Image: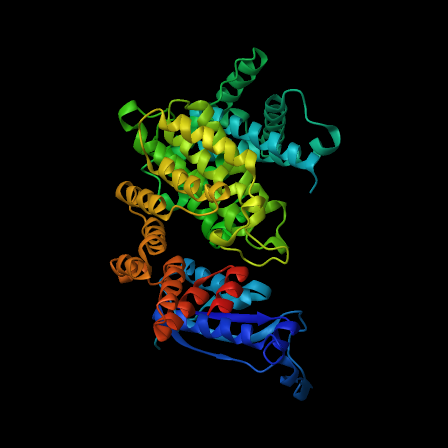
Length: 118
Length: 407
């Protein structure tokens, strides 16, 4: 079963990608990704650039609304995601707890929606 | 949360557990007993901190539970006798309390929770809920399970207890050792929750202290109820040794400090002395077991506080004994680490190499020890790979930072 792991980080954590904390930041992620690969559960995933470079688009009553910045105005912002192949939600939770984002941000787990063939 | 509130909570949970045990052991219905009492426990936690703990906490809880049930019955226009076994038991409990003959059936309930027919993964959660009154959501967080799923597992286990008619009785002498081990393991797992959670000292709150205290409370209860069982004493000694090092496990700035680098002056002497006494008492029974050996290993580590160095040959020998009677992954990895200290990194690596790759693939302590030994041997590429896995598999940010610095 496939689960998407959505990683949310605080502003300070986004900053740690480039400031004097960057060695620890990238070291933790490199190691975590190595562990996912070693376990043979990685289907895919990407890190995302910070929310400051996000743009949102919506159509309301046929009118376009384009805004700078991320959709949700929350303390933690989406920072990246993984798609993992795992036997159960329990396993997904275990990997979520090991994720660096769980230590000072939030990790959300969602099962992938499986479409039945038409 | 303050100390006064913690006292109230302890008394409330103790009384609650005694009542659940009493009612369930007579009705065979754990879920029914909990349902009947959960509202009363909730009310106790609200009212006792301001009104004081009643003289007879069990009587207060039972009376509140019965009042609540009668209100409910009136609302739903059903008679209270709809639950005959339970309410008959409640009536008996009331009488027993009035005569000061209220028995402690919690040991029976502990044996039911850790019964062979109950899935091992749900035994500790079940014990936390039925004996100690923790709610499913809190247990789910500790065990890293979705709250809804944890709720279902607990319900299923309780249905099984009722429908399979699992006996509320202390096991027969011939099956006591095996049944006791399951109870001890479940209590040790309660302690493990407190140990792991408190690892993040910066965010430590009383919730985590809770599991540690409850584990001690249960271990002490077992020692008291089963004075002739050396393994119960062994477990309590083990918990005391571990707990004696709490203040030394993190630096003042919150950094992880491995056991070998801990300042032994920070270890708690009173806890160590109590542990030593218990272990000596246990060994006088001449019935060695897993928990006595685990405690003996910790005792050997504790000697460093007196002699200044660790006797690794002794630690390795104790681990060898441990994995013979309890072949757990943690035991084998501990043995490899001790042998490496005693006879060099190659000897330790050879033992790690013998472990089944599938079993250790996602086992963090294995990779942490392996990384350390490979680094000592200057096998850089392999060491880096092992460090990646040790870092990637840990949940503890202090351990993650420590390993990143070692890498």
